[in-house]
Image (tube, rainbow, N blue to C red; front, side, top):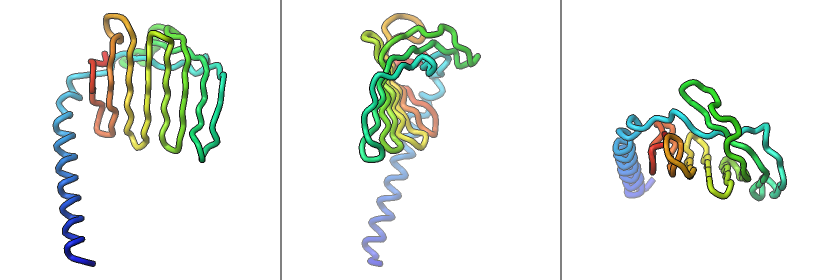
Length: 152
């Protein structure tokens, strides 16, 4: 193997590993400051399918329907307010990528799962107090990192 190519690959891997380590260390302190105590979860028993499109594995499968979401307390693992949000839920699956998008006109919840422990959750629920407002959470195998909002 050409020595110049081997050195270039080694340099690229070293720089990439260092940059990844810096990125994780920059976000790590924020993971401790924010904790998910309450959140929103779908109630799959209320899902009423209205449309299905796509031909997996050649094109994304998209399932749309109405669904209800409940307030959930993650510290006690209990639903605190059942079926509080009622709206349209669209689930898209393409390979290992899945996206669940819920909206009822005023509120919006979007969960994008990239696979391998990587995901992003966007929540926009009007109101004041814990669990309301706009939040964006990056979910990684190394912990969850708030991008925007407090997620409480």
